Length: 118
Image 1 (cartoon, rainbow, N blue to C red):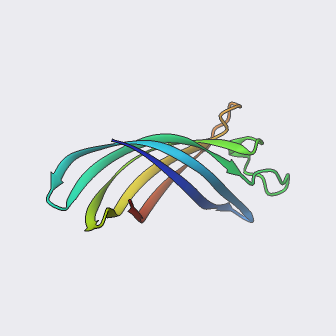
Image 2 (cartoon, rainbow, N blue to C red; image 1 turned 135 degrees about the vertical axis):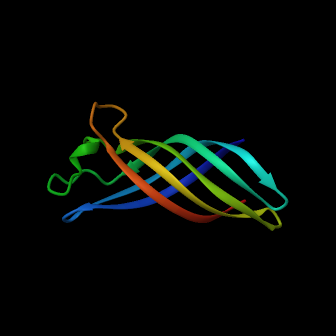
């Protein structure tokens, strides 16, 4: 199953360096275990996001100096059908965020996500 999602994220890196991302991802979801009203799933995907990484003194150097970053992600979770096309989801995702136009080390994050999908 394919999924398209928008995202808005904040990462407090260290000191006074805050990284904000606004973008979209395309994901592939595999549901190996399903039952009436729910499933356990694996998710993987990638996307692009606009970021605020331009201020020389507050720049997160690990992701380059352009305003666009690439996001790779993989994870797993559980979803439960609430009715009327709504699902409650809880999941873990590992994100790698880096500049797609330059060679840089990027940053890796671990995320716990709770949300609704429709």
